[in-house]
Length: 173
Ligand SMILES: Nc1ncnc2c1ncn2[C@@H]1O[C@H](COP(=O)(O)OP(=O)(O)OP(=O)(O)O)[C@@H](O)[C@H]1O
Ligand SMILES: [Mg+2]
Image (cartoon, rainbow, N blue to C red; front, side, top):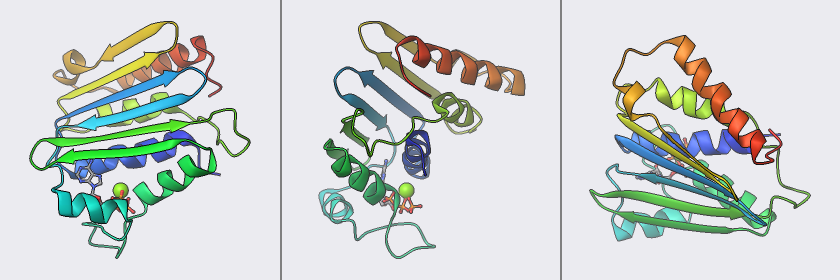
């Protein structure tokens, strides 16, 4: 079964395809899990946004309909959560998702740290910020290390560090 991190990685690919330089990911855990993916990519006009949220639209040349957003929409509904997509042409896109993470259909969290460490390897992303919140609050700003030469060692460090912070707030990875 696909884990939540795979879905999120797929959604971050949308931001990369939209030529984003910055991705801001917020993960907030309370009685619900909230995930926000915000980018500064090319965005969508109202017409495209309407089509996308009717799930009959893609700019992917290999398919006739997109799968990423419709799959997360299904998952959100299965777990009694919410889905909100906002976008402005030439400004960027924000996707806000909530999940009932106690729900029986909620997937495993998966290796979330590896998503961020994979994004770190993308040349065009000059800024990645990750907020992890519950009672405690963590913020990772990868801007500094993104401007330096990329190494597998740093990639591994990012992955482990983020997964440890998630375990600290009680996420079952
Ligand atoms: N962050 C974003 N910025 C701009 N456009 C977006 C963004 N996310 C989605 N879109 C638009 O919505 C369409 C549908 O997205 P969706 O993820 O459902 O499918 P896809 O990316 O086209 O294909 P797949 O995910 O199956 O590879 C995209 O083709 C793109 O035009
Ligand atoms: Mg997609």
